[in-house]
Image 1: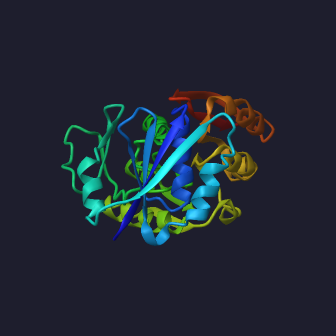
Image 2 (image 1 turned 60 degrees about the horizontal axis):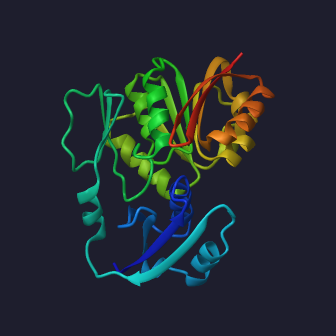
Image 3 (image 1 turned 120 degrees about the vertical axis):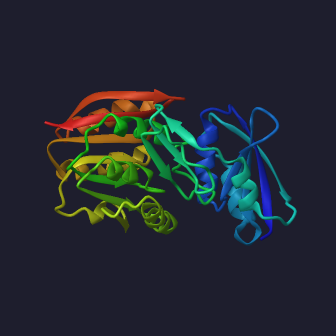
Length: 280
C-alpha cells in the first residue's frame, strides 16, 4: 500500500502534539512518529484516503488560535509499513504491575497482569497519558464481582484489565467500528469471555446499571454523557473520567456535582487528567 507522509511543525509542541494526533487520525492518518526536530509530528496516511482539500482546511485554518501549524506532504516508498511500525513499538508497564504488549512481544512473568493488545497502528495501548492513568486507577480499585462499563473503549484494554481483575461482567462500548472489531479481537486474545463489546454510544445504556464506569473520551462528550452515566450507576458506584486537560477539570467537577456525583481525587500527567467520582 502506498503512503503519504504529512510532516507537521507544531508551535508550541505540547500539548498540541496529542491534540493534532487525534485530529489527523480522524482525517485518515493511521500511524504517527516524532520527527527529527523537537516540534515535528509525522503523520502517515494511505494515498487512497488522502483528501488534499480536507487536510488543507484542517491545517491552514486551525480552530485553536494559540497554536501555529506548518506542514508539508511527500510520497513514501512502498514497504510494509505495519511491520516497520511494529519494529519501533514498545510494550508499556504501568505501576510495575500491568504490562501491556503486542502479540509480537514476549510476556513479562513478573507482571501481575500481562495484557496482549493488537494495536493495529492506533490508540489505546497505554502509551497515552490518559490511558495510562486510567489503568493506574483500575489497578488500585476492587472490581471483583462487580459490573463494569468501559465507554470509548478503543482497544478495550481497560475492559480487559477489569475482566482479569475478576469483574462479574464487563461491557465495552465504542462508536468507531474499527475499535469495536479490535476490542472483540483483544478480548479473545486475553481469554476474557465476560467482556461484551458493543458498537455505539451512551444511547445504548438504557436501564443497565453498573458498579464502575470508565470513560476515557474527551471533554465535550463527557459533559454531554455524565448525566447518562449517573443514571446508570448503582449506589456507591465509582466513575473514572479521562481524556481532558487540567483546565477542564472544574467544568467536569461541576457537571458531576449537579448529577449527584462526589469528587474524590484526580491524577495529572503531561497536563492530561484522570479523575474519580462516587455516587452518593
